[in-house]
Amino acid sequence: MGESLDADADADDGDIPSVLSDQLVDFKRRLGIDYYLQGLTFDAEEIWIKTKDGVAFYVKGVQLFNEDIFFCSCLVGKSLQGYTLKPQEVATLR
Image (cartoon, rainbow, N blue to C red; front, side, top):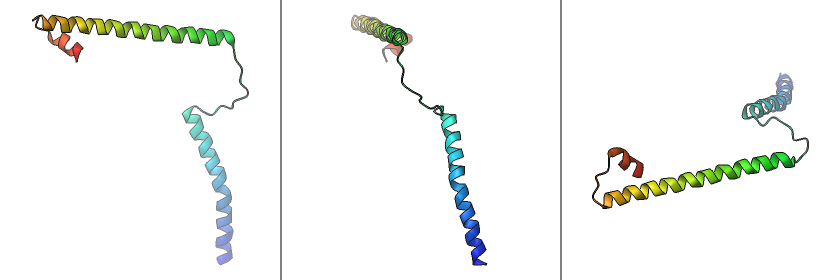
């Protein structure tokens, strides 16, 4: 009787790696990393376009940040001159 239990345990042990492998493949698919890297290729035109887009994104971000700083400094200047700020202006400064 003890021998049949050992035989069942051996059969179950053989299924565990295949179940884990299937679950791992499913998990990678759901994460979006189920692709295989075939080889690294560089497309100079695509790299240039992405670089231009990235630089333009950061330049626009710096411009917007500078405009925000200027606007906030104007609001602080108004408040120092005795102007009562509106609730929206106070919220902007916060």
